Image (cartoon, rainbow, N blue to C red):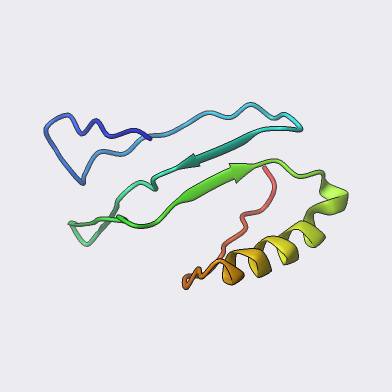
Length: 83
């Protein structure tokens, strides 16, 4: 987790590269959002990146969301399009 804020807690953003690999997983604290000049903290949230073969993606999404809900997750699961 990146916690440096360079004198601006809750306002520093970090951008990560990725290594497209079959076994790549990254979990981070999401960047804060700036909406109409107000910084919105995303404490308590997480952002994960992992690579799943395209032919298994839909099955993975269904199983992952079901498992996360079973663990008590109350928010939504958002899957971004493949880059």
